[in-house]
Structures are given as structure tokens and as C-alpha cells.
Image 1 (cartoon, helix red, strand yellow):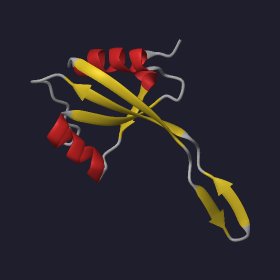
Image 2 (image 1 turned 135 degrees about the vertical axis):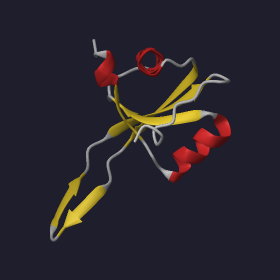
Image 3 (image 1 turned 180 degrees about the vertical axis):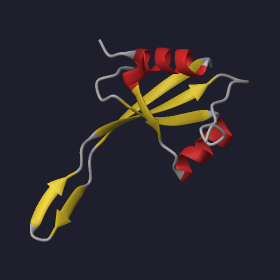
Image 4 (image 1 turned 120 degrees about the vertical axis):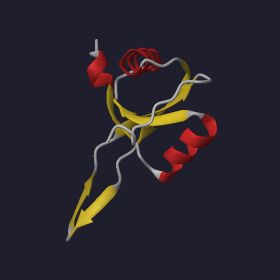
Length: 96
């Protein structure tokens, strides 16, 4: 079983993530690759004291990179789009 503090790795502070946060009250996060939707929901609710309506997950494939003649690949990772209930909000930029 994955610990609650290991489920959520860090927020994805991208332009698309900020638009989702403003318009749809959704938050985008990088999560543990083996975490399921129920574990992600419970971790977000307990860590940030908010109510979660839905969780969508995506498995992101690492980009292929080249250095000189050698090819490699970045690590695969998992992304979660968490929809928060009406009136609840998580703002990562205010805490900085």
C-alpha cells in the first residue's frame, strides 16, 4: 500500500493546468505511477482539506531524447486531473 504522502508528488504548474484551475475548478498533479483514483482522492482530501468530485488519470510516456549519437528516454509518469467541489479551492502559487 502506498503512503498518503507518497501518492501526490508535485503539482503541474503549466499554462493548460492554470486554465483548467480557473475555468473548471480542476487541479493537475503528478502522482505515484501505481496510485489508483481512490487513493488519489483520499490523499487530496486529507492533505488539502477539500472535497473532491472526480479524478481522471493519464499515463504519460517519457520523451525520447538524444545526446550526440546516443538515444535515451525520460521516465514515464502519471498525471491526475482532480475536479474539486463547488466552493473548494487549492492554489499552489499563493503558498510560495
